[in-house]
Length: 197
Image (cartoon, helix red, strand yellow):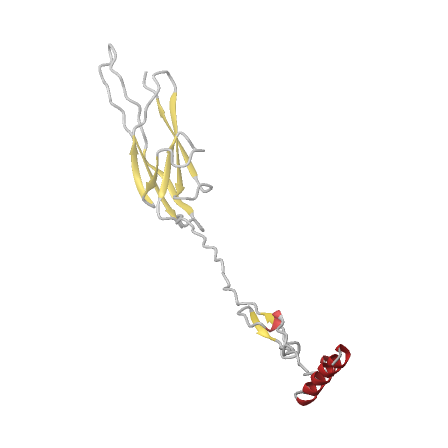
């Protein structure tokens, strides 16, 4: 057998074997395509900042937004307290009487040929005031309230020394009384005595 005939037999055998065990193979292009569905995210309800509950106010039913509420503030009431010091009642204060109960006398000094001497005598004044619970007295200072004392009784009398000058003439002293606390209501007495030289 020549080489050509031998080659034909070999090819024929191969073809025969291929016909017996041959299976049908589909091309890759003809394979069925399996559809894949990508999962899409489920949309969630958007939450706005205004829907977030907080403690700052109430939610409006119309707009869904919260309105701030104003807390009640305590009301502070300021009271002014005025403190007044107690003062003597001087309404209608007046001097009922102011007199000299006993006149003064200047002392007498002994001299050669005149051995008689005397120590002199004081002055006694009396007063009565109304509309006040006391009296104030001044000696030789009619414009100075209570220069001799401002806590005397509303009525009374007072004995005062009467200093005399040593020169010829007379000595004069002035006495003033006020109802206690009534500095604009006063009365004065001028009392004189002869100097003994």
